[in-house]
Image (cartoon, rainbow, N blue to C red; front, side, top):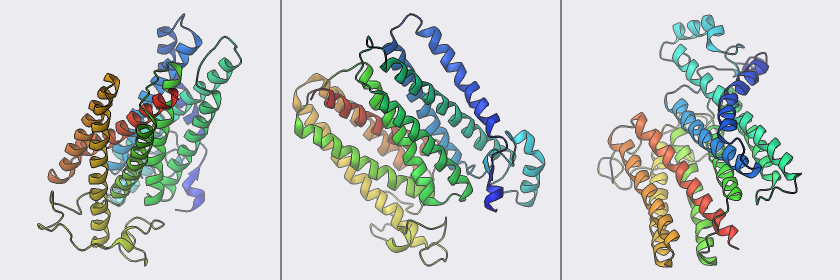
Length: 370
């Protein structure tokens, strides 16, 4: 597909209007819910609502990828130049007739476009959040630890996230772009999670060593999420079909890191331009497993240190992190032993998002105690 065909901005304003309409419902509900509340309380409620809907969007994005619907509409921002699959029925029917099991079907087109509609709605909510933040910053009576520049940065972030979403389609599920799009979604959740803590500060003094440990664990988790994204975007989930061994009772099967971790390449293509070897997929999956062992061990150690701290809040945080760690272990193993069921894959993505939000929130509360 040529670049001219990949980008067709004809339905852009229609999609923007639909995004505003979708955002209108939660905004109206929030307006009624927070009538008479302070500006700070309204901002906090809007941030929490946006965080919740962004989490849902991340999960729906995972569903879009896992259901092989990422190219359900092979152009951007619409579907064959239309604002919905209804206007592209003939084109979709032709593509589906030519390749019945291909990436373009009526069902996949709807999944892809619903994902874009929801993303537009979240973008509008973040725009409103940014406007409200700057408006309230001019009010001397509004006392909040959240600065309007954070909302502005979040708005810039979601715009970049939209650009990566467009590239995901137009570059035909290019693995590096798809992985960056996943990380962008996780980053958006972290920004919103940090912002929620500023409107209702709950400082948690744990000491400098635990604060540094929190940051280190967050960085380790981000690396592991990136590895998980690399596994998913390269369809390497079942490259290791055994657990705890990898293949045929082997702990260390044939691994090809050179091809597997050549970052800038097309889907299914190796470093030499040929087909991606199976040993490369195995290397990708095996590395993610090793990373999981490292992060799981670090989580256990960190939770143990929190429990030893003596503060009851610290123990509560330890329990939450252990719960997420158990969730990730069970959902990750289920992906292998149950042959990659959709529900387990979505649960694993949700657990990764929850872990990053928890660690971000914990870091924000420690930052407030400085």
